[in-house]
Image (cartoon, rainbow, N blue to C red; front, side, top):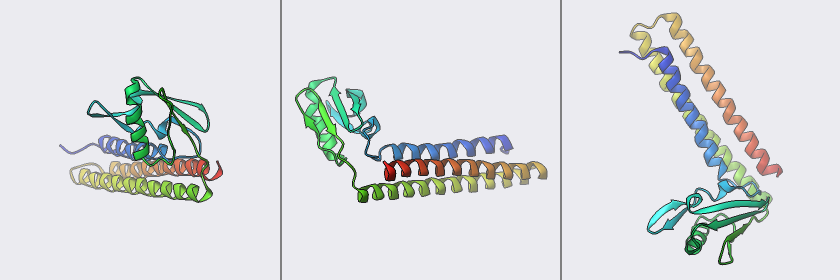
Length: 187
């Protein structure tokens, strides 16, 4: 049974949304000079032989814009958390006081800010490529549906809908790029 126009649009929209979401998640891990839990949440800690996300074994607090405080639920994990932070090359030196770990955020140099901004541009281009691939697949599905009996007018509307989705999600990528670049370059 051929795919309906609604199914083709829905599939394309879901895949475009996933591309934008992927870019958002990757961008969260880029330091902007402000302390955020997203910088350390994805770290994995060896918890009794199992690599476990940091946020499952410790509380993460941001007492001010330049400090992250990590308090493990089990104090025996302090060394493992410290090891995970050091191996992640976050550019921060953990300070372990035996009860919790403090991560002071060093100020970003202008050169490092530009490097991060370039990384964001690469992520945005990857997301744009993903959108174009989804658009290509959706247009192929629309053409196949037309061959299978979808009326000409419906096929034309479907192509227009696919392009509108691509434009809308492209704008979301641009907005993300601009927001994160501004955060990086202008503090």
